[in-house]
Length: 117
Image 1 (cartoon, helix red, strand yellow):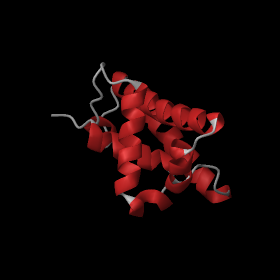
Image 2 (cartoon, rainbow, N blue to C red; image 1 turned 135 degrees about the vertical axis):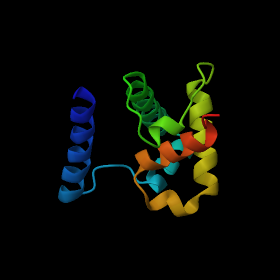
Image 3 (cartoon, rainbow, N blue to C red; image 1 turned 90 degrees about the horizontal axis):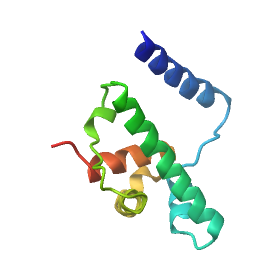
Image 4 (cartoon, rainbow, N blue to C red; image 1 turned 90 degrees about the vertical axis):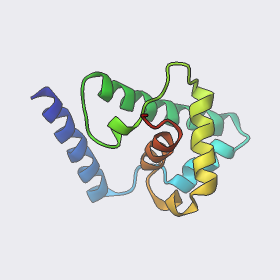
């Protein structure tokens, strides 16, 4: 029941957000933050990638088994820098994804970089 409540809350938040206005970073905006030179841009990129990565790992830890969450197996040895580099590599090669919300881009990048074997 708890898992269902979490999933429904996430769906509601995404739906409610889309109904209002765009309040998320696009993939293009995230790429700008992750390739920027200013401290605020670097911090924004790090925080964004870490927040999504931690959320995915937390959902897996409580037993949420939905794709793409279940398709990501980030090794304990993977650092924040490893995750950021994976996102940057993905953004450079997947220009079509730049219009998507940054969170989706990060998930797609992590699936590609850290697939479950």
